Length: 301
Image (cartoon, rainbow, N blue to C red):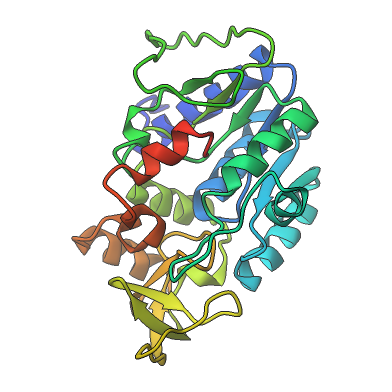
C-alpha cells in the first residue's frame, strides 16, 4: 500500500521543483546563479531532477570576484562539467577595469558589494529576465522579506516596500521591458534542511564545508583565512586551526568557525546545537545592521 504523506524534505523538494518549472515556463531567458556554495549546489541538483531526463533549460551564472577560495573554483568547474550545462562567468575585475566598479580601499576591503554591478551588467549583456538564486528566508532578515518571485525594476533595484502578493501557488512574473526577477526556490528551506537533504540525496559539496586545518587570523570577531587577497595588519597574527566554513563566498569576508565536524552527520549535529547564526561569521554582514538589505536594494543577489 502506498504512503502518500510526504516528509517535510519531500514537501520542500516538491515546492522547489514546481517553482523551477514555473520559472522556465514564465520567462524567456532565465539563468541560475551558481557560486559553488551548498545552496546553489542543492538548487542545481533540484533543477536536474525537475527537468530530467531533459537537460536543464537555462545556463548557470557565476559572478566571480576574483577573490575566491581555489577549492570553490575547482569544485565549480568539475560540477559544471559533470552536469553538462553552460556556465557564464561575470568578472568583477572586468567591471573594475571598465571603471563601472571601484575597488575599495582601507583595512576591511572586499569585492563582495561590487558583485551587484557585475551581476547587473551580466543580466543586461545576456538579456536575462529572471535569475534563480539560492537565498533562504532563515539566513538573514532582509532575505526574509523576499517573495519567491522578487521583482527588480529597470535599474535592477529591489524595493522591499513594493512586493507583489503571492496567493497559494500563483506567481506573477509579468514585467515591463528592462525589468527582471530574482526567483528563490529555496525560500522556505532552513540551513538544517539543506544539510539533511544533502545527506538524503548524497550530494557532493566542496571540502571547505568540512573540518580541516587552515591558517587563520581574527579580525572584527571573524576568523578569516590567510589568502593572497588579505594583508595582515599590525598586531594581527595567524595560527593553524581546525575550522570549517558555514557559508562560502568572497575569501576576504567569509569567516570560518572552529569545528571538528568532518562528515555530514557531524555537521548536522553541529548545526542542530549551534547558537550562532549561519551568517554570523560573514564580515560583509557586520558593516551595519542593514548591510544585506542595502546591498540588495542596489541589485545584490
